[in-house]
Length: 101
Image (cartoon, rainbow, N blue to C red; front, side, top):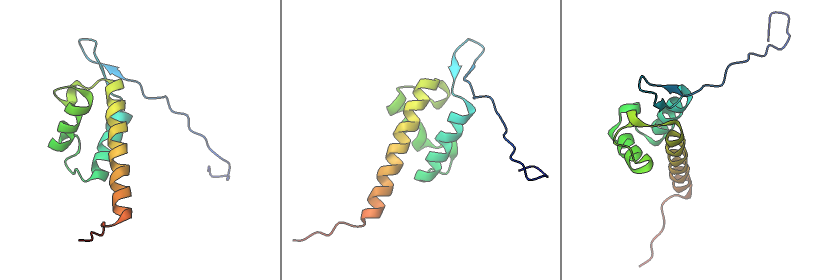
């Protein structure tokens, strides 16, 4: 809202992947932020430098390091992390499983 009570709409450009010096595309800042946020939600507190995230990226995107992620592979990583976080949440909601012997 502005000072007169009117609605203010701010338009921002859609983030785009930025090429490196050799022309390879890198994930957008929004993709990096999402990866870091979902990783933190899972409990990985070292952000993009967390070794568990690096291992996940290697398995999911088939790259040797997060720095070699391309935008489409970053999307796969985000989907995988979100699915994992949702599964962890569902498991916590279900509580411990009773075992009868």
